[in-house]
Length: 226
Image (spheres, helix red, strand yellow):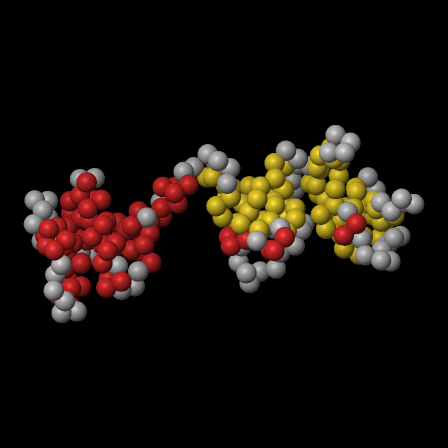
């Protein structure tokens, strides 16, 4: 994560604690040249700004591994390589899965994503760009940490075939009891505005467990008049 922070820093004056901390970590790993470069960059920053070198940096300068003749330009490629692997240190092995937005949480704090008939994952809304619209039935690409199945990233995705999910077009019918269906697909009331009964509609649907009947069935996530 030190490498990730340095790759984002545009001014060494704002990255001095990171440079010094990274130097200690690299030295502990036996990467003395890279550690020396971090120290050298920190020293140059102090000198460039006319600041007095602090005690912690003096201690690094006096370490037996410090090499004042290192080429500081070699650190850039090393930092980029390390920063690209930063997510691996945080989340471990990750997998990507196509999913469908199942519902938006109250207060717009997150949403549930349907991955399969047996898996639905909660996604924090702060992982989603606030510049992009989001509604149930939208396709998204999830990046999931394999260890605990938490979602660490999400992005928009194009519609693709998914087992136990799909899209159909047919006539929406409302029964005498007020239940709405499109063929064998149940449509929740909040997706059926007044006047939709008898209309031809396009439906994005998934297979879910009907807990009242203890069996799987089709459920609509999005309904659009054709």
